[in-house]
Length: 318
Image 1 (cartoon, rainbow, N blue to C red):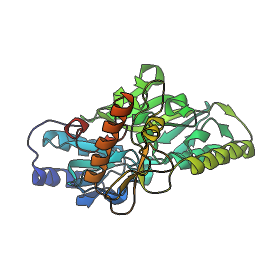
Image 2: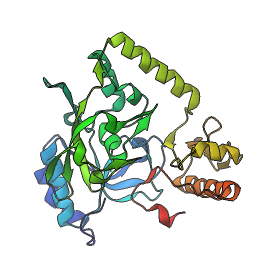
Image 3: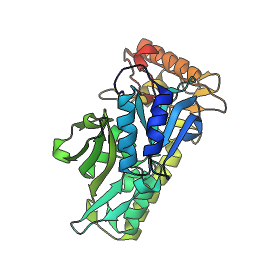
Image 4: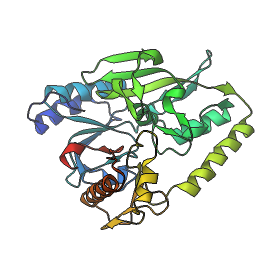
């Protein structure tokens, strides 16, 4: 996400926004991002913020826009790579409890905050006897990130359960959009390219017995454990080309176990690049380029990254 493309004036920005934030908000300079991602690599954010509610978020966005600061949303950091040099912008995480609400409503819908982890959302829905959320259990994301990427697993997609999305644009405007007004497809929601998800009203597919729903969740858990690596990763690294899977193409090219430094194509699932201990983003990028070249040579297919290169553009690194 980018705001006004003027040169950033960090001291002016910090001086302007600090007094306007609530005491519960956090604003940190040079904050390490590697511990905030599932890949466990990369450099710091120039400034990292955790707003304690919508008013704080609005103040951050307006100040960033005024001072020409680029803004980047960070969920659980599960579908992104942070460059080794870090992110020269304002990274905003919705980690405060204010963003983690789960509230069933009388009309049958559920309000879920953008900071609510999908695992928790699945667990709460299961306890409430609400079916249709089971596929979310193993996705290491918050709802905001899942909405932005239309995250999916086990044949289910985030927008299968969405009824209405609440968002805030980069100029601080709050919008409420029904599902019919949203443009979403594979790993993308256009309305969230330049906005923050605040939360969404979700709708269960049906009511059911908690124990029956729990059994389905556990079946998905077993399937995920058997088919995905346990080492730190950013999830599937490439998008699936039409009619096939990226993992199959990479496997057929003989690339399982291929390494650059501590970055490795997982022997368990070829569409995962895992961190074997001290991988750098540069090593992951070199491995991505190698995999793309080999698959293109072997099968004539150019794989496109699914993960986000945080604060940078893939076209500058492929």
